[in-house]
Amino acid sequence: MLNTQDILETINMIREENLDIRTITMGISLFDCVSEDESRLCDRVYDKITRRAEHLVKTGEDIEKRYGVPIVNKRVSITPASLIGGNLTPDGYLRLAHTLQRAARTLGINFIGGFSALVHKGYTQSARNLISVIPQALAETETVCSSVNVATTKAGINMDAVAEMGHVIKRCAELTADKDSIGAAKLVVFANVPEDNPFMAGAFHGVGEPDCVINVGVSGPGVVASAIKRAGDCNLSELADVIKKTAFKITRVGQLVASEAARALDTPFGIIDLSLAPTPAIGDSVAHILEGMGLESVGAHGTTAALAMLNDAVKKGGVMASSHVGGLSGAFIPVSEDAGMIAAVERGALSIEKLEAMTAVCSVGLDMIAIPGDTPDEVISGIIADEISIGVANTKTTAVRLIPAIGKGVGDNVEFGGLLGYAPIIKLSEYSPAKFIARGGRVPAPIHSLKN
Image (cartoon, rainbow, N blue to C red; front, side, top):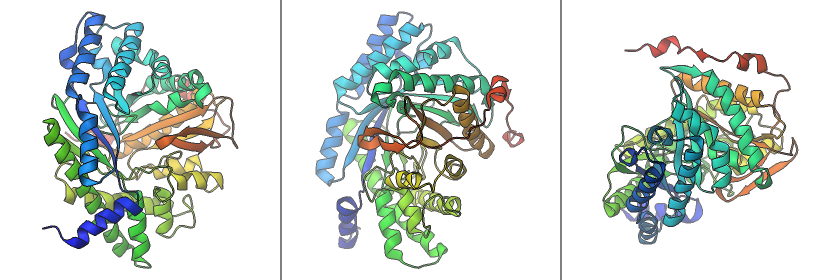
């Protein structure tokens, strides 16, 4: 039974504490669009996406009006393009990217994800062709997002792919230098990529998913920060309980929206991703949650411990609120999208080394971090290798989304606007991993991968 206090509390979360549904993402399988003819493939892809997601935006808007819950993004994810491209040439994949952009524009959605490849154990020619045009595809489209999975705990790390992605990220930045290198912000490099992630830029529709599915990503850092403030000087066990109960309430709102969207669109409900996804808005910051827990600044000693506790409590609360929790689910720590993280970098409290340590206990990885535009490709690959190794060794998803800011250096900012915010350019190590990266090959899977 609903009671008046619960209703009023939820209204306050929305009005005062920045509670929102970050995204309704419709996943669409494109396996039935496969064709040896490039034109026929693109036509089938466009037709299926626009047919299945025809009412996605309107449904989201209707739910917003009915319940008063802001739904920030309406998105589509597709089967990884390299799996349905077959014998497409690089030019064919570029045409497919433009087809995805055209479908997104027709639907009025915010992003479309799945211009992706899975190369954790090696390349197919199809994957090679797709990866070769990622920079051009992201430069020539506005809403298309891309991801490449280069490692799993079971397979190890494809270091040839890691080396290549250093080049690809740098090229993405160069081709969009006039827009603060935003092309790189639409590309993610993964280890242990989840197949039901509703969040961009890494979303795609997994091969084990149904033909079409609705996944919802919630948000709510401001709600958690307010709950911690109200809790006062309690001990950490009590604080974890406060976070857990708050995450439960946030996830129940997401469950309601997901159920309503699935019913209205006559599409199966997939998962709730209960990640705390921050925005540049004041009061909607994961960094401010950590500081509310007692840190003078995020980046101080103790930050990783506080984040580990937060992430665990969020997951425990969320799984009680929904039987189908998936995706990434935890706490995101992007720099450009979090006002508190931005401030910590600007005052010198937060380094890339500390961010890397934090990724061992949070949802994803090194996310939306601006680096000097003259950073060598192999240094970017080294950062990827470090982060991906954390994921492989800990049997968790990790990812890298770096923005080499062409023409800029430490002390400068990049400005994206909207949810992507802005970011101060962070200092990197001056020493090179070039010889290590050049070895190539595959880093073997860790011994604990042998669990069968």
